[in-house]
Image 1: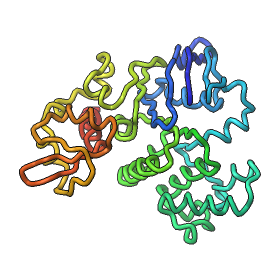
Image 2: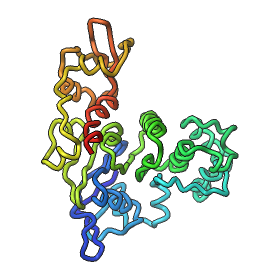
Image 3: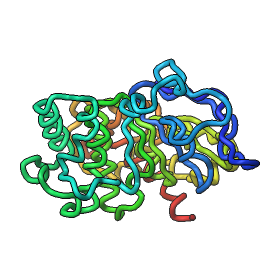
Image 4: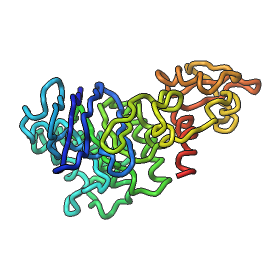
Length: 312
């Protein structure tokens, strides 16, 4: 879906991104992470040509981004900002309708799309569609920002630290909502964050930048079990919890439940062994003496990355 081939971005003598090469697969949740100034946001903005590259090529649907008309390409790439940037004088419905109107959708189709998406993110259209952004909370406004990016059904969504300005409770709630939404819509999402816990929770794969260079690309499991170098180890935090058993972990994080159709894991298995299952399933059922307990992928990776946040 998206391919970077030897991409470099320079500002004068300063290299913001150096020789970056990677692919983002269709339907993948791909997270760009790194310290401030590492090049992650510059990389994101080069995808939709908000920032021009200096060298190399970026391909979107097997075609160089430079070959597209800018406005046409951006219609096919939704964009969610940290600042939300809703038009304050427009209603929520009018904000969401912007790109479909530019693409000359029929008004009935636009109205149906607005109602569908607002319902999908838990905002009742009859209650919120005709309100102005200032009448909504920060979390509600950010939900509208996500919906607006999805309005014209683009195949790709770019998200630039969309939850970083929100309080921790709202932020975690929106992360959970995004996970649920992605299961339903299966878009290709490129997501920028500086928070390793957020990256571990959301990402199918993670790309870690440092001073404009890619240090490692891999799944959350690969970052935890096979960090490439000392910088990666330091950034994610060395954490011994991944050597505990699944039973010990689930006793700290989950209550009893029916196992349903979830894959089964024995409580004596090491938590690291569960990573192989988490590559394809979000939840496993742990067999314990007290019955079945459910263990969620996002909870595991968030917990295992918390030491990084505690020691920062």
